[in-house]
Length: 243
Length: 243
DNA sequence: CGAGATGTTGAGCCGGTTCAAGTGCCGTGG
DNA sequence: CCACGGCACTTGAACCGGCTCAACATCTCG
Image 1 (cartoon, chains in turn green, red, yellow, brown):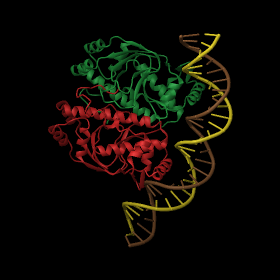
Image 2 (cartoon, protein in one colour):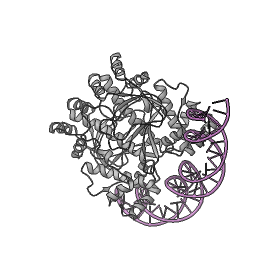
Image 3 (cartoon, chains in turn green, brown, yellow, orange):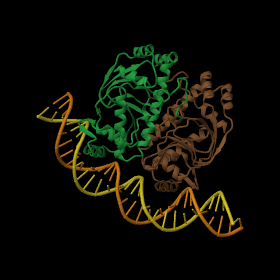
Image 4 (cartoon, each protein chain N blue to C red):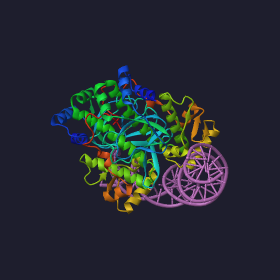
C-alpha cells in the first residue's frame, strides 16, 4: 500500500499534504513479482517501492551460503544510491510474492531539491538503515535463541510502525529466518520449538505468530529505540551521518 | 593529521581549494586522549575528527561482551547525527593513544549548506560507513580465519587510502581484534599463528604487520571495491541512500 | 495425485569457547 | 639500573553450541 510508504516517511518528521501528494504521484504501475526473484542484482540501480509482501537484501558467500542483511517491508524505498553500489555483493530479492512499483530516480531527486520535508525523510531512511544493520551486527554476537527472537521482534515492530500486522503474524519461512540469523535452518527449527514451548510464538507453514511480544522482547533484549530514534530530533538541515 | 581528513573527504569527489581551506579552519585545538577511553558515550553528541591513533565504535552486550562495529582511523569524522543516536547502545572509544579535535556542529552544518563539494563528501561518508558495516555483517558469516584476515585487509586498505601504513603495520591488540571479529582472544591468537606460519603476517607486541597483502586478500576474499566505491559516480545532488 | 519445497528429528562431529597455567614484554618506581 | 607488577600473548585440555548428514513427515500447488 502507498499509505505504508507515507507512514514510513512520516516517521522522519512532518510531511505537508503537498509533499505527500507529490510523492504518491510518483507511485504508478505496480508490478507483481513472485517469491524468490531478484529485484536488484549487483549492477542495475533502479529505485523502487515495496507495496506488499516481504523482500530482503542479501549476499552470497563463496561457499554458496546466503546471508540476509535486512528485511524490506511494505513502504520501504530501495534505491541503491546511484553507482555507489556497483561491484558490491548485495542483491535485493523477494521472499514472498510481492507488489513492487518502480520510481523515477530523476523525479525523486527533483522532489528532494524542492521539498525540505522529503529531503529530510529520505536522509532519515538512510540513517535508519544504518542503525538497523548495526543492530544486526550486534545481534550476531548473541546466542541463537536471543538472535532469532530479536529478528522477530524487529520485524514485528517495523511492520506495526507502518500499520501492518496488528496481531504479530509474520509470513516468513524458517530457511529465510536462518539466513537472516546466520544459523542453520535445522537449528532455527529447534529454536522455534523452544520459543513455542515457552508460549512466545505459534507456528504455521511459512507463517509464525508472536503470541507474547513483551516477553519475547525481554528475552531478546529488544529495545525498539533504534528504529524510530530521533523522529522529531533530526534537524532538517543536519546532514551529518552516524559516521 | 589534518591531511588525512582532506584525503578521506576527497575520496568522495573533488573538493575545491576553498572548500579544503574552510574545512581545515574548523580543525582547532586537538586533544590527546589515552588508550581505552570513551570519546562518545550513549548520550553526548559532539562531532570530532580523529587525527592520530586508532579508535572504534562499540557496544556492550548484556553478558558484558564488547562488540566492535567499526574501526575509526585518522581522518575519520565521527558525528553522531544529532539526537538520532540517543538511546542506542553504541559508544566510541580509543584503542590506542589518540589525538582528537572537536568540531563545531553548527559551523559544519553551515559549510554543508554553502559548499556542494562538502555536502557531497559528508553524504558519501555515511554511505561509506553503511557499506562497511554491511561488509562486516557478511564477514560474520565467514569462518574465523577468513574473518580475521578480512578485518586486517580492510584496515590496511583504509589506512593506505589516507596515506598511512605504507608497510602494512597495524597497531592493534589481539583482544581488540577479537572483539571486532566476535571471536575469543584465545582463538584470535591461534588464527594469527596460522597466518604467521603461512607467512602472511608477522607478529609483535600490540602490533602486527601484513607481509603479503595480495595473498591475504585472496584468502579473505577481500575486494576493496566497497571502500572507495562510486568515488566519481555519486551525483552531488543524489540524496538517495542505500535503503 | 505427484513433485517440490517446508519443517522435524536424531546422531555424530567440529569449530570455537572456557578455564587455567604459564611466558614474555613493557613501563614504573625505587 | 634493576626489581616489580601488570598487561599481552601463548598453550593445553575439556567442553558445548550449533553444524552436517540423513531420513522422514507435511504442506502447497500445479
